[in-house]
Length: 116
Image (cartoon, rainbow, N blue to C red; front, side, top):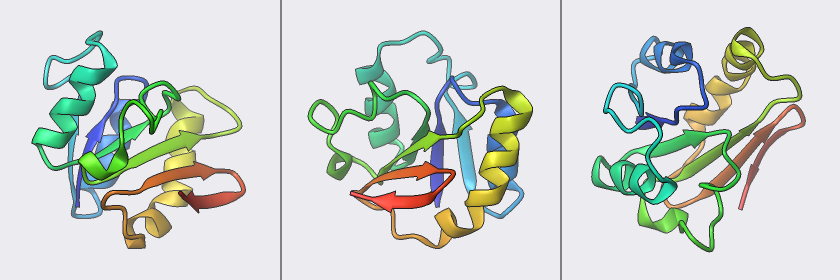
């Protein structure tokens, strides 16, 4: 699976994904930091990537339909911050990687994973 990691996530999230044998490109590495949401979405679509973000705006399925790319995953941890976010992704990544994400909008919270 291939992921596009939004700028609101620590780079360690990409490391966690790569460590499990999957591809992960960060918005920062691709010089998309600060770009409007449509540009980030288009880059994920072009790269055939799942967009991983904490930004509720880019996860607006009316403006950015998940069917236009490999899926959108919205992370909703109770606590934010670098360490808390990395711990959150570590807890949920195994289940997330087993989930069919293509064309879907997925919300990951402390309660678990919801697919819309």
